[in-house]
Image (cartoon, rainbow, N blue to C red):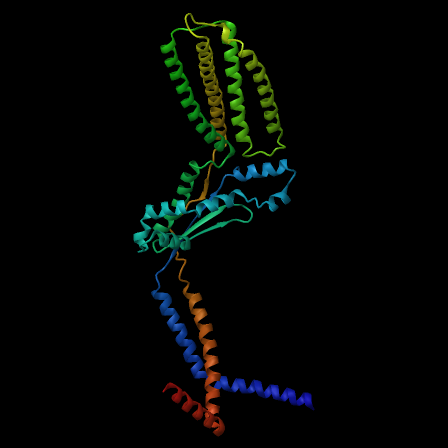
Length: 397
């Protein structure tokens, strides 16, 4: 019997709900219809937004290949790359597209501060980041750059401009290992050239003060050998410094270079010990012996800088050749064209959402109206409501 009463109670409850909905059906229809009409008008008067897209294929050889090479030397594979957070080349170039440098170039190129009607550059960058989107294909690693704008032609030009600015940015960045070596040797060459110039000027000034000094062939050979060894050691040290930026201590090439450097230093120590005895072989009539020693030192520095410049120039040229072979090439798969259809607003979706919201709100309002009507029809509830109103008025005073 209790189960039957429960079923009857539930049936009556559902019927009560249905009766309330049918009773206030006009209100539900009016609110739902009004919501759809208002949403349609809003969607119609909203400014259409167009989306232009361009797709690019980033270079497959980049800084990440260098990182993977390091991990392979350490005995790591895919697990090691995941542990160290190594990303794909597409992630690298997607990050560059989102950089402030490219954003500022786009702002200046299209005068976006005036277009967006903003006073500060930060605001223009924020708006640009909202209208620009970058996605990376899950399987193809192709980067898609999309830009939204009121003008379809400007949207396509801005999308293509992002790719153009990315190409210009990569030209000035040392992304590859060869580019890093080239930049390093380029800086070293400047210092070596300055040192050679100072040595030449010092040798010239010393000769003008002391006159001609003769050096026998044996002493001259030792001086040149010492200078040559010192230059080789300096060049090897520079090479080691560059290698340590992308190699681990277990790298065979690094260990081989360190071994060669140790051998050169041992040989230099032997030659310098022998070179200390060559000052007596420098003849200069009427001059003090220390003049000969000073001349030998200056001559040694001059030969050192000459040899070092020659070695560093060779290293620099090799780095340039490697960089040319490892040049960064960004390929455009699909160039952005002015879109024919607008991306926003989606009027059908707006109207559909408005109908759903309007229908839901009307149902809530219907049950509230029904409750209010029943509350007023009950004398006890009516008295409570009147008392509540009096308290509210008293509080407001």
